[in-house]
Length: 361
Image: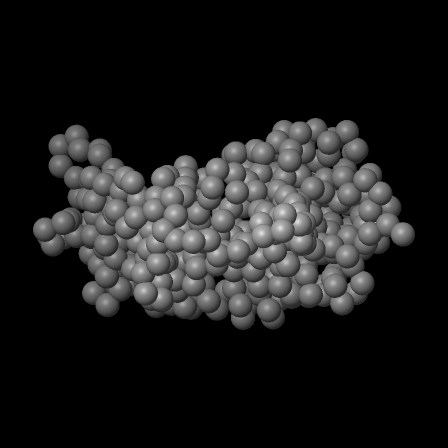
């Protein structure tokens, strides 16, 4: 009997092609639309995505399911995100969504319903290999490794570092070995109804409102002063909680003459409601950071260990040394990097995602 796979259909092209690929490979595929929370003050977008997901299942001739995870999403993703902004740090809701929703509540639901696997449209890969017992040279167990997606511009392993081997054993990433243009081409070849649909941008639950508008419903935002490194007031901002280290837009700086040099946020003071900026990008960078709640995808390696560390999505991973520092993990970069508190720092060995954690102040 063919293995049963529940594919998380977002209404987009990546998940649609994932479902089509699995069906063509002989899996027993069912499409599942995951309904997440959306604030009442934004325009409803999930209904349109749900309709697109249904249209995909009709085109592929597979069953359609819907699971309402809006309460879980609000509690485990949105509330954590808002709490982080209140503390003056910039969180990573995509990581929370993957850990708690797609590979948490959705995975548990799928297994309860008799699925062997779940699948998503993430651009990442999973490698299965047999682990060798060095003592007697016997093959003892199956190991699962998380790899970057083939398409460097779309790779999403950065958002998946919280997964473990048990998650990977039950997960399929059908488009991880393809380029985005190949996925589009397959969608058109198979005449999928979402073949021309544009990729979603930003946070899925925020809709068309800005992050400022969204947070203003939960956090008191007041305009404040922009300071230079010497403490002099040189401009204004919309609320210190909105800014993250390294940001270079969203605030106003008084300029003289023909000065057009960008200014980078180098410090955020929530109690004082100020941000400090500098024209020197390197003033926003640092040589080392501490990591909270470090998670290893596989077995915890012996430390210290030389790795490539990625402090932001779509940023090139840089050489660094990872070591233990009491209860935390310390990352020392070979060269200074911008690493903002609350963001994820993910470590790699070439294409292998080893794990990651949350950057502390």
